[in-house]
Length: 248
Ligand code: PGA
Image (cartoon, rainbow, N blue to C red; front, side, top):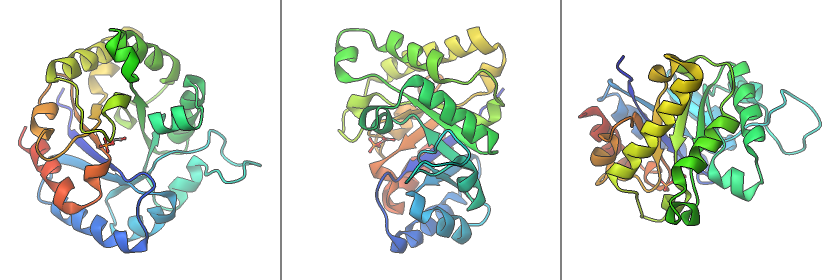
């Protein structure tokens, strides 16, 4: 089975209304690379305007609550994302796991909420620096996979993003061999639990991906795309990553 390449921008807490023009420029350029699935996950405040300005393009949230509605001041539910034009949600980003204390069980519940709302989900995993240095990265990540991947899902709508925490926003990246080893281990664990479905799931790499290193990282075994933070904020930086994916 050939998995389509998937390049997703995570804008984090960046972007005011004027940034919609940048998203339009990115999506217009992405039209030149029809073999690559491209998505942007802006802050909640821009999702509706971005989805309206980029009809037919994939716009997503960066988080959702696990409940569909209720007394959760300040939170946003997955059906609300779908209601304003999102078709995707990222769950379990390390900035949520670490900064907001989200457990594997929380992440699993959020993934289930996203899927139940009809969204595609990108579920993030990744080890901190000390775990990498002590040689425990694969075990750590596989424990996150075991604890946070839901039991039921359509493999076309659930992707995994492997993002080593020490590589996010730092300019540091693992070796291509290390990326391939972890992605292969993730796919192996998914296959052991879900059988053939694992072959249809996309596993993205994230952490300091840029126009220079994208081709090499995206070519690693079991890497089906990239989740990109800083380099997704402008067309000038993001489009070369999309182009690198298209070349593979
Ligand atoms: P970065 O962020 O590309 O800026 O390292 C990636 C992410 O956190 O998704």
